[in-house]
Image 1: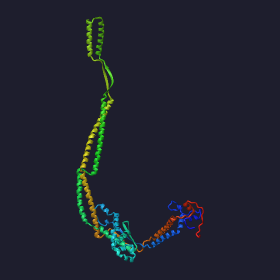
Image 2: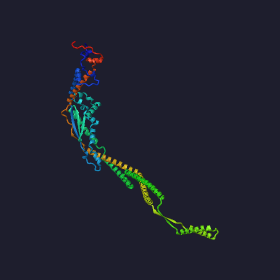
Image 3: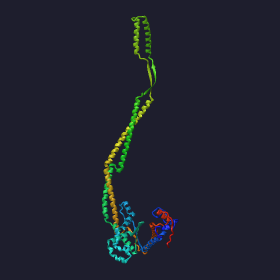
Image 4: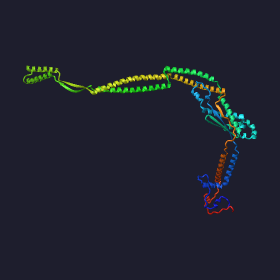
Length: 515
């Protein structure tokens, strides 16, 4: 039987499948170590070939790696402000600015890593001394010597210098390092970088303007500043103005507080006036005195006349029965009755004397009214005083607002002139320092360790690279085995044949390679 698609079905139906679950890597299945080893073993020669090829390339590449030499140098940044006397008139802020070493270190690193510095170095020593591939092969270097003036070749050398330069700052010390394939190249490049850096540093720190120029400008501004300050102080003294912002805020606050107090007093006045009016209405509806009793006074004369009149009327009645109306006696009695009646009418009747007493409630209401009236008068007096204070506060606010623009203008002018003056003094100090540096050839940069000439190559990374390459080779062999397993679509067992063809296995035939 040929090794065709049915080769898997010839070993028996009871044979377990040795392939990956479902026969494909793309399906979600957990692989055991036995299954992984089984896949690797089936494709062992292919995996071994790939691993051997990659390992050979790795070993060859590691063995051909050139040696690397490293040259180092150290630069100290000294505080130059301590070595040069400063003008006593300079402010403390200007002095402290020169002592900020952190910012200066960043500036120095910017000079060291600048493109201009690397370009000057390549122009001096040539690109052949920089590029590692040309510095170790003399014959090849002579062959490509005409390319030294090629701009692209020079740019490649400049980029090599910038990428190969390593720098580190620690305690005001800049440590520089440069690696190359030869010790001469590493030393030459780093030494040239340091020398060019020193020249560039002196050029940047050199004085471009005389300190006298800034000094004269500063004196002129100082005169203007003094005049502006005097004018501002005169304005403040004349109108009693301090800090405009604080005084304006204080005036607004006082005006608001007085207005609130005045409104509260007016509300209190209205309430007190209403209370007084209510008390007055209550007092008007009540009597001041209250009746405690009555006493009757009898008129004795009137009582006697009344008794006499009654007697005459009894006598008239008796006579009227006995006598005629024209009888003289009867007429006389009637005349007396008329006279007594007239006299009795003129006399007063009995008098009733009423006993009165002062009403306590009325008295209490009067006392309360008097107290409220006094409170009302005091409140009105306070209202007048507060109204006057509110008016004075409003006048003060208007006064401040009127003179505020002039005061603010003078204040801004003073601040502008002071800022410009301080800037000129700062420039004067820098110019003085730069002039002193130029004069004495002193610099705040010292080379504490010149570029070294490396005698031994730096510690090689060959072992690490070799181990890494061997690991990658082994992993690539295993990966190759799984790839071939994925590409293999043949059936190795009867179970796979049933599953793939959807047909039952009727019989199995033993397979022998000798047949």
